[in-house]
Each structure stands twice: as C-alpha cells, then as structure tokens.
Image (cartoon, rainbow, N blue to C red; front, side, top):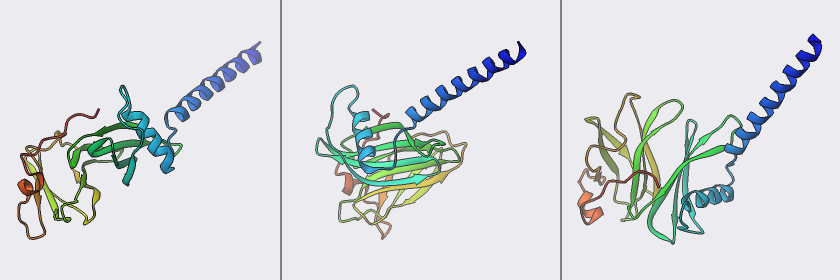
Length: 196
C-alpha cells in the first residue's frame, strides 16, 4: 500500500513538473533568430490594433538578462523599441514594445542585476549628438552617443533610483560641448509615454 502511495506522489510531482516546464518554455519561446525576433515584435505592437506588417531591426544589445531592440517601420515616422527578458532556457519573453514619432525613446530599465537608464535613438543629423545629459532623482548622468545613425546607449544608475523618466527633458550636446537640444528637436521636445 505504501509503495502504491509513493508511486502516485512521484507520478503527480512528475506531471506537475512537466506542466511547469512546458508552460515556461511556451512563455520563454523567442530565440535570437532575427526573423523570429521581428515576428514577435510585430505581433506585440499589433495588439489590439494592427499598426504594421513589417519592421527593420536596426540594433540590439544585451545587458544582463535583458535584450534591448531598436527598430523602425514604414508605418510610423519615428523609432520603436522592445525589451525582452532571458529565461533559464536561454530564450526570451517579450516585456514590452513601443513606438512613436520621436527620435528618442528612453526610460529606466531594471535587469536581474542592476538598474540602467537606456536611450534608444536616431542620430541622423550629421551625427552631431555626442552625448546626452539626463537628471534622475536630482543627479546628473552623461551618456555617450555612438557616431552612427541608430543607437542604444545606457548608463548604470544606483538601484535605489526612483525615477522612471528624467527630471525634465534630456539635453543634447555636440562634441564641442555645445547644447544642440533645440537645434535637433526644432521645437520643444516631448517626453515619452508609457509603452503601448
């Protein structure tokens, strides 16, 4: 009788374990394959309304357990970004996607190790932008911008930082330390909103 009871308990544990593994692999199912990554982003941004049927991934970077993706589409004028989390099976789950008409998207991002302020952007104005200054919780951070058309840049910040977005609008500077914020935006810049 005891053996039969032990067999039932072990069988039940195995069944529950298989269900957990199956569901985990279903959630963390996105690979590093560019086509699958594009399809997953398209599927995410087309909820609840269809926005685009194609995107072009311009850049990706990995920081700790997160993958950050910058993309464009002919269906909107600005840039889009996506953030994914890596699971123990080395595949990814989509955290969120967003897009807009701005040339920058930015916010605080938390990984499994640290917090970072991440900027997704387009430096297409003769690549004039050399760095960006942001203020978070009253502390200033200078983030170097690579001299390329599309970029993802970031700065580590203390884990106790509360701000999700900067205090005020980030300031843009050229390599001569000149403030080119108004020149780049042409008008007063707007802060990004919560992900769509």
